[in-house]
Length: 179
Image (tube, rainbow, N blue to C red; front, side, top):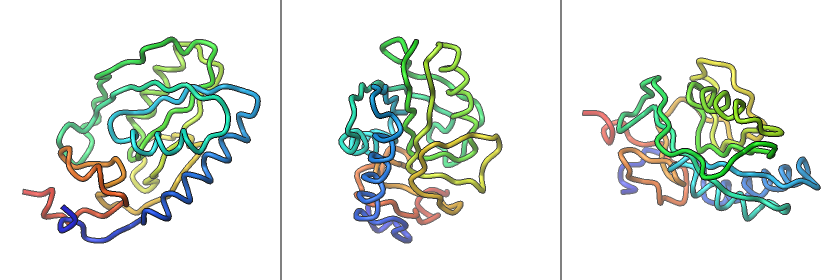
């Protein structure tokens, strides 16, 4: 599996350090409040678990599955909710937890959908951000790392459901995802 990795972009140690920093900042910003962390399945699961443990205020967890990729390596631009939230977000402070923000189209759709449900606030936390690929304006409140326009896997990110369990973020060799 690691033979398909062209280069390690972010080491396990770098990820751990940044997650702790994000958790500390979120704890300060939401001091005295409880937040509902909404993880975007499946890519954000590992990041969200580590982030939740780094936050020192009460957190509740819920998940959504949203797709615009399928098994492809680029977004189709068509957003579908595959799994909705289990509980109401009305009056709650929401922290959307994403693995990666690319075009921003999926996240823009998601934010608009959640705003219609009357939460107290919505903030966005992403592990990885590709600002060079942005097609729509998205405000990222908590950003792990800005990364180059490369196809990355590991630490929850996949290609065709593979590589999620790598403890680092790596750049996938093009031959691993091109035919």
